[in-house]
Image 1 (cartoon, rainbow, N blue to C red):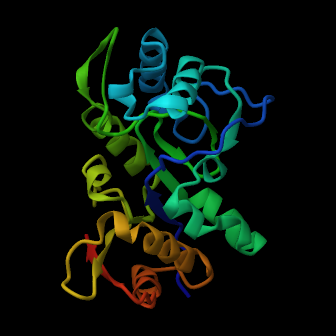
Image 2: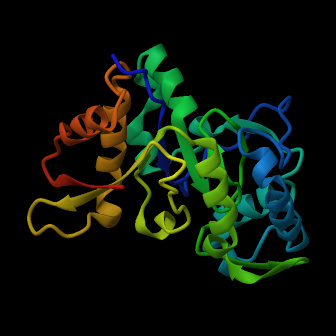
Length: 255
């Protein structure tokens, strides 16, 4: 029997986030699995957001009470309370993934094998301490030592290097939306395998887009609802292709 290969799943963050956190775990840019590799970049963004008063309505894409919350969080990132990433995000994908209702073993496996690609953090493991924040990948943030550019451009090189190094020798399952996918460029010389997963409509084969978020969460839940048969790319692809949804079908591309 071949040795078990760790499968890492790339997921997007969500606009919806749980607020607050554990005050004993004060966030620092160097925290977590990717802190050493991405800490300097995170520190630059945190400083720029603090200098900008947390960011404008234009930068953050929200208004009213949502803007006030986002500005308060973004203005005091360093030292702020944290939740682990898998508990911080609460949007549609994450609510349908519904990690708390998995078995303890499945839940633990998911926390250690989800990598979130984030506008503020670059990349964060599901079990890593994560602050409350708001910063989209499409946002253009300007600050000291930070030229005006989208977060996707800012993060592409360091995130690509960090994820390839962290996941070296293992299989990466990419369930990112298109606006996040170009940030990570898989290196076939480092990874054991890479598969991009998309959902398209059964009716006309068009990309699912926003409407497929719930189905994407269910797909990832389906993938994590077993951990014993994910030793090879064939096992992983079989598990992915066994997912069934009334509206969407799975399309995979393997590198």
